[in-house]
Length: 240
Image (spheres, rainbow, N blue to C red):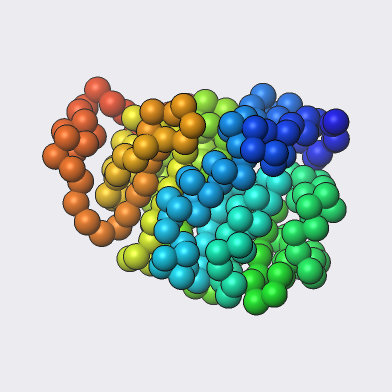
């Protein structure tokens, strides 16, 4: 099954745990692991950001896609605000129609606002680098689901400057979690002032990455991050 979004066609794919994901023609990449979209979301983001244990109140997600981030979060939390970004407006409409994510759903300015019980979602439409600067967030982020397409396909959402912007919008207690194991992503986080941690990856990925604003690096990882041969992704590199 395929459908057309604002950026091109998407192929609907059933993953190994029975949940559905998408393959984007525009980015030439899937939105989730083929080993289980819902399972990956729970492991990398719900568990990775410890949202249930910490009773997170304000969550920021990079890339709404099928809405799995909100769906899985709402299974472990009730009262929270969920901010997300999405470049493809038609994809947001498709996700709501297919998955019936929200009880109420409307467009307000350049965003879609949805509610489910006591939970509220605000999905910012457009270039995330711009929309996060234009929107007035009600609370600082205490969890960040860094779920953009890969640095190879979508480098602007993996740069030092992007992680600096996220840092400015976050509380001291924030946890950022991503599926990426890239050394350059870790270096970009490090250069932006985040404490970086490696954790076991999902399925067959060797590792995943978390970021904190408190704590200390492990000696082994700090040695790697201070290696001048590893260069962070930067806006200047991408725009040159």
